[in-house]
Image (tube, rainbow, N blue to C red; front, top):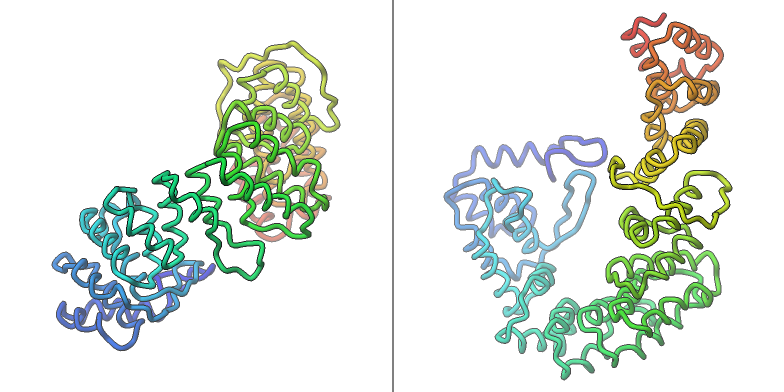
Length: 444
């Protein structure tokens, strides 16, 4: 257990025990405890040693590559069950997020990966070692052996990176054992994405067509569509268009389209531009990345679709208007970025959108629109209209802060009047926060 566990962030008694172990145990005692019969004790002993600067962690790791005892772990909200050998490795692997932490060196990590790959073991860390490995000529036969003899799925992906024609049949026939007989191709699809040969197309098409009558979705479909998209040819377009019309159950169609969208973003190519437009126009699926890309292709069309995003029941118009995006304020928030484009090109329309969204936006998006008010009196009515019935503290506090920024005694008095009959503004933490806000601004 870490020092703070579960959603409550509670400090567990086990952490107190661990700190006491660190304080009283000598180096030699901790080294001895790494071989204790109890797996939990072994883990804490190694963890304690990793806090010291005079310990050869790599020497200990090498002796625990077959330490398969399972222990339960709890770090913050994340609970897990893992083998002791995996815990040792995770505690000692270098990473960019903890540059000051006591870890093995990258040279030692490379040696550890070799041991994990070449020495038979059941650790999950072996999969990571294989995934990290560079597809060198020296390693090729071992990787192939792991695929053929041990059915190692991670090794299959590495094998595909060699792009050897002689391995096509091995990749095509690889299937993991799963509860659902039609699953088991997750790593096969990833391998095909690395080595998109025409020989794999029949498998991909056959498996795709088997999904079309399903009443549930599978996470494997995500990799299936990525494998198809990796081809970047006319056949890929044909297969990627199938779910738009052939999926039998509409509630499952959404998952297909989402997976297609993710796939063509990962393997982006001008061949897929028509599909990107279709997914935005007909399925309302887009990201800031895809939006900016499509805007660069056809600003006039994207501008009309932007209006539809922000204006209820907006009917798309044919337009040749080319919006100016050279000086717009950038934002990582998709809705705000779109609004900034409207603001830069049509002040009257942007005011209309802000007014409407102040009255209707959800708790997450409301601050985007109130931040654009800038003491403009045209928005005061909308702010009060929303405040009249606001029962979410995050909403009414945001509205009140925006209204206070007008620095108008009439507006301040109206805030107090609204509060008298909107009882939600007087309850619980929100009511207390509002008291503090009004007091700070001397509104009473």
